[in-house]
Length: 129
Image 1 (cartoon, helix red, strand yellow):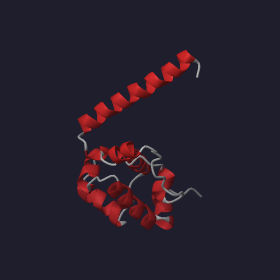
Image 2 (cartoon, one colour):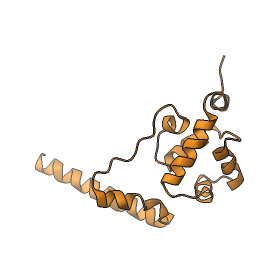
Image 3 (cartoon, one colour):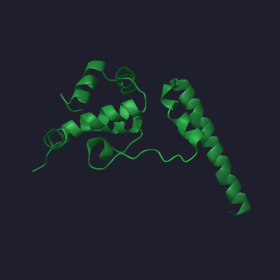
Image 4 (cartoon, helix red, strand yellow):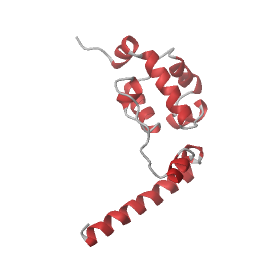
């Protein structure tokens, strides 16, 4: 017998999912309205997920996990959510504020960070380190 994701979540962890969803959103300083907009869902629908009143489709759970930068397993309660591992205190403080940036500024930050990481990797390749 095959069970749907919604049925499994309803039976095994809707409350955990709702709690993890709220905690992850709040940890990233994102409002319900903002996350609903990012996911292109109605704000009332999102609110029902966070209250445990309904369950999103699996593809939406994947999008939520991506938006909240966590694994689907952590989101649905199969594993503990991991805190970002940033050792530099200044970077940690800035990381905590990134979600408050506009989408345009976040995209610019992604491009900048990607170019710095690529440059570092290239330098290591050239120097043989």
